[in-house]
Image (cartoon, one colour):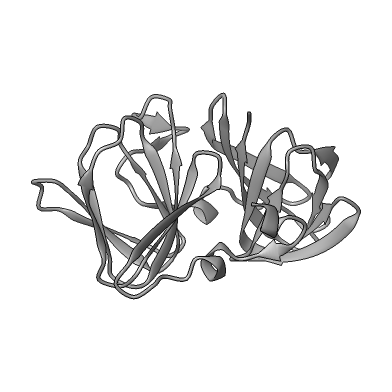
Length: 215
């Protein structure tokens, strides 16, 4: 992630699908970004742990092996794929998505059921004068938290305890990082190195996902 450090970027723009190909690459330790060209697919396979699939752009179809039901997961939507289930994926459009493995019990994740499609933006409301946070993944090495900021709220400067990526979901936020401020909009990303001093503030409404990987 060295090339992303200290600047706003877009994982979608950095992972443009190649016609006829599927591409994957690690964006944080153990976290993978996939780009699938329209019409390409990945054969049904199972994982030893449950996996969060977050679609950044495009549209995928998920089908469990030997089952007739097909689940569409579109841009901005997320699904938890349960451990031990053989699930294949096909891109209906050029698609970029992130997979985040979980090592905990796959039954529910803070009230979220495996196999159900949801949007991160729907999981945290705005509240006057408040910052609201909700953990989706809270494990020893991996944290995935949703946060909403009311206008005028923010987090004080602190050091990142691990390597992290922000996914801006809604509105506009300001990221202070190592002495510089960066404006981030919905659909954009920001990377923190471990130990990077940063803060977050919002002049208007702002929602984001924080994905943190600890050593």
